[in-house]
Length: 211
Length: 317
Figure 1 (cartoon, each protein chain N blue to C red):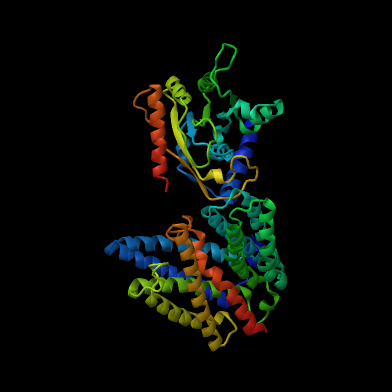
Figure 2: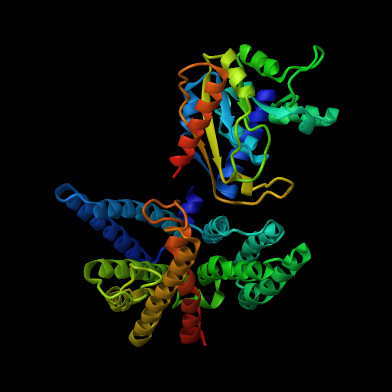
């Protein structure tokens, strides 16, 4: 049932809407087709980012892909939480790391999902930030990949999508934009700092070869 | 399916043009293919890419223009939409212009509805009169007066380039007085597009072959006097021989083809200057080898309204 809703929303509605009206172009989307489980890391400037990425996930296992969202922004009320769970398939995490034992550890939530065989979409920048500018990655992504070195990490560069729905606006407008999938990252070592640096480098490579 | 096939009514003239277009494409494809086999170069590669795109564009256009008038309007409306989107992507507009942009997009269906109904006066004044007042007022309502003049000038002008010109193609098909026994809007549409694109190609070919003296050295290095004169002359000749699509006399044909050639050159030059200001080579990368939509239809957006009104003046009045 959940799968059907997600396919209706993303594969049918959002994919066509984004392609025809917004002017989104998918590059190298087939990377995802061969993979069963993956961690997608993307730059984040707008709420449309999640729509664009979810619409490019193959419909066969769209129900097993979870965007990771900040609980303090998207949580709030019960209704909002339900909406996020069913319409976006999102998993909410607190933005701060656990300080006491009662707190939920964000890394632990993500790594539980991966252990269950799910794929996740992470924005390692942590927030939407300034439009069109990529900030440094948070270390959390390093800890996560360190725990699960066997899972494919696929970088996704979103080019110009922030114009369609900038921060603080609620009107979606058409602009030509691109979503570019890279090949999965081959890490040399699985030290936390190394992972963060390497994935950032892969992103810069994607940005360089985008045209 | 039968219904669709029955609704395609092509008179002999239109069938002739389709045959001519297809044979030109076949000849061009084989020529460049052979050329590439013997002497491969960057130019030939670009030519092959361009011809391949021409195949696609011709099929889409012929499908849209001949099958059903409704498809013609929807197709042209989407062409306007894609063109506007391309322009707004390149323009660095203010965040406070976003509501007005939505209004600009909404004027597309309205304008094409007027074209569909064939309401001549409403069609003519909707953008140059109403939108030129409403758009600045919407910008004022957004409340941000910093750099407002730029937006006030750009947005209505983009409508003129992207919608007003192109929608005249739709009006050709629907205008009641242009669709009677001795004159067919579809044939005129084919004539206009054939001549405009032939003008583009001829100016390009003559410029590449003989080009020496630059006509607009600061705007576009590719435009030369040789290309311009050769293009205008050959376009006039082509227009003269394609005259069987129109009810015009020989002198009128030569006049109209000459005007199309000149206006086509103007549109090309205008968009070249715009691109220079944006600092880009092409408006987009939607059509391989050609660039964006506006790179291809730049001349069409300036030839269609003069063509329509010349025909109106010569044939109907």
